[in-house]
Image (cartoon, one colour):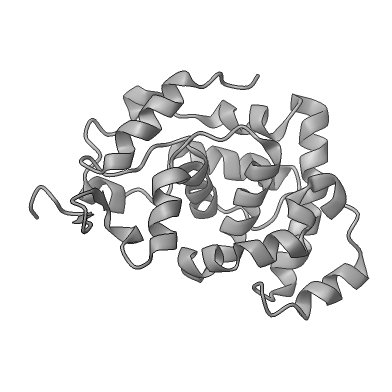
Length: 211
């Protein structure tokens, strides 16, 4: 493969990761969110839940439904979602704007309760999640397209997945957790040469990691 494997050049000459090529909305998500560090608990809970909903589907499908998900799940405020009951489950199962999967809906409610438990122990979901940031030395020296294709899990995603499951979370397998780590900036998986890679690295350099 050539040096530009995994990238595409937009009309303005900007190089981006090829996975976001299909729509402007996808490119905006790639440019402004994916791989950029997040410390806000609501956004973290949303990202982890949506990665669970994405299992078996494309991320673009989830992204296109994100506003409906936010509306259906009280903007992913964990305190509110934790109080959802049978009527809310039926309401969500009737909502064509989201992915109507009973197991994933019930999992989101369950996981909201588990978020509150994590906050009691660690102070925030953010403080818990950032404990799993990998040592930079363990990451590939150059993130090529080939290297990225081989990384669907990591030692850290395996460890976080195992710990979350032990704490009663569901739909948090190692692959889902790794996708969450990519989305929230625990890892920067923009391919070398992508214009957003250096911006994400700069954002991480400025970040005060929550403790």
